[in-house]
Image (cartoon, rainbow, N blue to C red; front, side):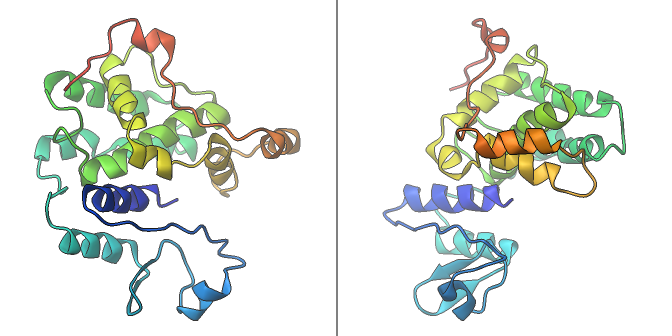
Length: 229
C-alpha cells in the first residue's frame, strides 16, 4: 500500500496551481494504457507524454525537484528519532514475532510524549512534511489492522497521539488517499505471515458497506486532546 506517495503528490499539487488524476490499477489485470507505458507495478507517475516513473523513491524525488517551494522535507532529528521504531514494532507484533504488544505500546507512548513536548501541529512543522506522509498512514494502519486481526486498540489515554491523528484525519490529502477499513484489514490478513480471517469474517468484510474510521474515541477526547495550532 503506497498511501504516503499519494499524500505527497496531492499535497504538492494542491499547494500549487496544478492538478493530477489518480487511477487505481489491478496489477493482475492492468489496463492497456498501463501496459503500453511499460509499467508493471503501482505506484507509477506519468507527467506529460515523455516522463514515466515507476519507482516510489524516484516519484517522490521528482516531485520534490519539480515543486521545491514550499519544502516539505523533514529536517527535525527529534521527530525522526521519535518515530524510528514505530513500524518495526507494529510489524513484529502483527507477524507474531512478538506475541506481547509491550514494544508497540512503548513506541506509541514515546510518540505521545513527543507530541506533548512540541508546539507544532504535525511532526516537524505546522504543515505536513515527508515524515507525516509516512507516519500518519502507519498509525492508521496500526489502528485498523491490529484492531481487526489482534484485538489491539491504541490506548485512549494517549491524548497527544490521538490529537495528531485527529489533525491528520482532517487533512483532505489524507482523506483522498486513505483506503477503506475493509481494504486495510484484507491487505494485512492476506499476507502469509499475519493472522488470517475466518471465511465467515472475510465474507462479511466483502459484503459490508465501505467504512472509513476517521473518528476519535470519546475516551481519547474528553476535552484533553492537545490542539496545537
